[in-house]
Length: 101
Image (cartoon, rainbow, N blue to C red; front, side, top):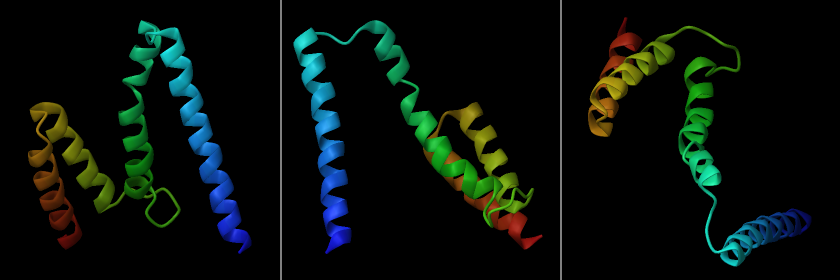
Protein backbone atom coordinates (compact mmCIF):
# COMPACT_ATOMS: atom_id res chain seq x y z
CA UNK A 1 0.00 0.00 0.00
CA UNK A 2 2.85 2.35 0.82
CA UNK A 3 4.39 1.84 -2.63
CA UNK A 4 1.14 2.81 -4.35
CA UNK A 5 0.90 5.90 -2.18
CA UNK A 6 4.41 6.89 -3.25
CA UNK A 7 3.45 6.34 -6.92
CA UNK A 8 0.37 8.55 -6.54
CA UNK A 9 2.29 11.32 -4.74
CA UNK A 10 5.13 11.33 -7.28
CA UNK A 11 2.63 11.26 -10.16
CA UNK A 12 0.64 14.14 -8.68
CA UNK A 13 3.84 16.12 -8.17
CA UNK A 14 4.91 15.55 -11.77
CA UNK A 15 1.47 16.51 -13.04
CA UNK A 16 1.43 19.66 -10.89
CA UNK A 17 4.84 20.68 -12.20
CA UNK A 18 3.79 20.21 -15.81
CA UNK A 19 0.47 22.01 -15.35
CA UNK A 20 2.21 24.93 -13.63
CA UNK A 21 4.60 25.36 -16.57
CA UNK A 22 1.73 25.19 -19.07
CA UNK A 23 -0.26 27.73 -17.01
CA UNK A 24 2.77 30.04 -16.84
CA UNK A 25 3.25 30.00 -20.61
CA UNK A 26 -0.46 30.54 -21.21
CA UNK A 27 -0.35 33.65 -19.01
CA UNK A 28 2.71 35.01 -20.77
CA UNK A 29 1.04 34.42 -24.11
CA UNK A 30 4.08 33.22 -26.00
CA UNK A 31 7.13 31.11 -25.28
CA UNK A 32 10.31 33.20 -25.53
CA UNK A 33 12.55 32.37 -28.52
CA UNK A 34 15.47 31.50 -26.23
CA UNK A 35 13.36 28.86 -24.47
CA UNK A 36 12.14 27.47 -27.80
CA UNK A 37 15.75 27.12 -28.98
CA UNK A 38 16.63 25.30 -25.78
CA UNK A 39 13.62 22.99 -25.99
CA UNK A 40 14.81 21.69 -29.38
CA UNK A 41 17.73 19.96 -27.64
CA UNK A 42 15.60 17.96 -25.22
CA UNK A 43 14.67 15.00 -27.52
CA UNK A 44 18.26 14.26 -28.64
CA UNK A 45 19.51 14.64 -25.07
CA UNK A 46 16.91 12.21 -23.73
CA UNK A 47 17.53 9.73 -26.54
CA UNK A 48 21.28 9.75 -26.00
CA UNK A 49 20.80 9.40 -22.23
CA UNK A 50 18.69 6.30 -22.86
CA UNK A 51 20.77 4.70 -25.62
CA UNK A 52 24.42 5.44 -24.79
CA UNK A 53 24.61 3.55 -21.46
CA UNK A 54 23.26 0.38 -23.11
CA UNK A 55 25.84 0.70 -25.89
CA UNK A 56 28.93 1.65 -23.88
CA UNK A 57 28.25 -0.16 -20.60
CA UNK A 58 25.80 -3.04 -21.09
CA UNK A 59 27.18 -4.91 -18.06
CA UNK A 60 27.72 -1.88 -15.87
CA UNK A 61 31.35 -1.28 -16.85
CA UNK A 62 32.43 0.65 -19.91
CA UNK A 63 33.53 -1.80 -22.60
CA UNK A 64 34.38 -1.51 -26.25
CA UNK A 65 32.36 -4.33 -27.74
CA UNK A 66 29.96 -5.22 -30.51
CA UNK A 67 27.19 -2.96 -29.23
CA UNK A 68 29.37 0.13 -29.18
CA UNK A 69 30.78 -0.68 -32.63
CA UNK A 70 27.29 -1.21 -34.07
CA UNK A 71 26.16 2.02 -32.42
CA UNK A 72 29.02 3.86 -34.11
CA UNK A 73 28.04 2.39 -37.48
CA UNK A 74 24.39 3.34 -36.91
CA UNK A 75 25.44 6.85 -35.89
CA UNK A 76 27.46 7.24 -39.09
CA UNK A 77 24.50 6.06 -41.19
CA UNK A 78 22.12 8.39 -39.36
CA UNK A 79 24.45 11.33 -39.83
CA UNK A 80 25.05 10.63 -43.51
CA UNK A 81 21.53 9.62 -44.64
CA UNK A 82 19.23 11.22 -42.00
CA UNK A 83 16.98 8.20 -42.61
CA UNK A 84 15.61 6.49 -39.49
CA UNK A 85 14.74 3.20 -41.21
CA UNK A 86 18.19 2.92 -42.81
CA UNK A 87 19.81 3.66 -39.45
CA UNK A 88 17.83 0.92 -37.70
CA UNK A 89 18.41 -1.67 -40.42
CA UNK A 90 22.13 -0.99 -40.82
CA UNK A 91 22.61 -0.78 -37.05
CA UNK A 92 20.92 -4.14 -36.45
CA UNK A 93 22.83 -5.82 -39.29
CA UNK A 94 26.07 -4.37 -37.91
CA UNK A 95 25.22 -5.61 -34.40
CA UNK A 96 24.51 -9.11 -35.65
CA UNK A 97 27.69 -9.09 -37.73
CA UNK A 98 29.86 -7.86 -34.86
CA UNK A 99 28.32 -10.40 -32.46
CA UNK A 100 28.99 -13.19 -34.96
CA UNK A 101 32.70 -12.33 -35.08
